[in-house]
Image: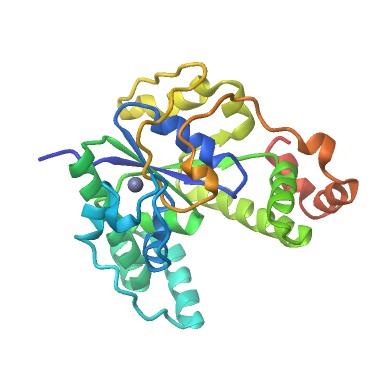
Length: 285
Ligand SMILES: [Zn+2]
């Protein structure tokens, strides 16, 4: 029987370096990066292209996979039902898969669909490792409901002040909303990390010494890290969703972007410190 690919699941806030982490992993032999797999059905519905530029149905990776998937929309459960499912999922994960699957059928369906994509991709590209950059802790939790999937969570952190500053600058989001989101997501990640052990990656460490960060991730999966300076371009990247950066196929440099230190407004930093400074310090920032 063929080995199923192992799944590296990146979990973290946007603007935390997931594009760079996915990119560096995708340059390694035997590793395929899929981007935000969690959003596959939505991206197909919206007619969004693959990072290679093709429509998803015409992309050499996604076309054959989509032909074998059932992505018909299902009615979205009511909020109370979804909350019940989440509670069941949380309660069920430590108890084993079967009770959790019964308690959270929509999450179990999502996990089954991800398992099918991983399997088809493994057969198609003969990759040993798949990088899923869905980033959402809930997605990582869902994957645990399918016994076919072997997930290695990658908890990706970056100084919260840099994350929030970058988001506000790029998207004009209300700073308080960005800060609250960072706090909520980071708290969720720390909680999930207690349930499901994985590898913690700090964006700043990744830029400073990518080999030291990638080796402990890839060596247990039987992959020796090959890094060039500057990093080798990814010849074919078929990545889903995410920031425009997910289409990036080469990087010039690995210096961390620390522009927030000189550019972030004092008011933003004060607001961050009062709402989330304690959590940021717990992460070592
Ligand atoms: Zn493509």
